[in-house]
Image (cartoon, rainbow, N blue to C red; front, top):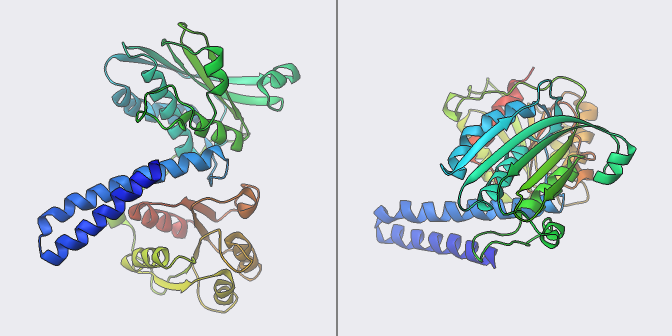
Length: 364
């Protein structure tokens, strides 16, 4: 039902744009374009949440300082929840890093804070707290996760709380206590899928009238967290050096056209292929290839990851950017990418694609 509404908004806006352009009435085109883009973004968000619950989204995990991530989100959270809600952040000193997809964790945290706000219609307090946790066998059984070191990210509100019945259904897809039209019921189910796919867990602690605490448990990463990589805008992206060439493999012609346009705007030479067999033929030739951009799901019996692995036999330093709507774990090697590989999830903003291309090619 939601998708049909969104598709109606997109297709209707495009039809009106076509009509107005044919009539020469261009002043309305921007309005219809904005409506189509808005509906497309909402459809992408809905798809993303469904894939997250089914644990079939593509994650790009990085060693992450969760305290730094929370601090970077604080201003957005304050503006989102509004002036009647007090925000308190309690970051544990010496918090361990976690191997996690930072944008997905940001999305989960924002969703938890929006749920907390909605549970406090008269205002209240949200506490965001991090901590290191070591779960022994007994605690791990209680949390339904393997024993070991974890860090927790908990969001606590002073709201209405949950009955045991509501708490038991809270992670079910499309379950919501909000009025029709005010929530899809996918926020907590998405967070559950994300936590499980990351190797962690999510737990709810709540009593009616006593508020709610939702805790994300994320596995500890043994090593240093990555520093965020500040990237400039696409207009500042360095031009391609003479002869730098990118191979684009995707069975969807529209996506190939879009990626090729961005590459040519940046001065790269683009070669296109519609399936893995054609892509591998180019990769096994002596043509210069500085970067492979490929969908993961390709027709013909070989997926994008298998093609990239086969190409690396003769091109061990080949840089790869996978662009994908989702990838089952097997498609990206049980969720793990090799060095020199990265993932960009569809649908993407054109500028983001340009920045990722720049970032990958400019690395060592």
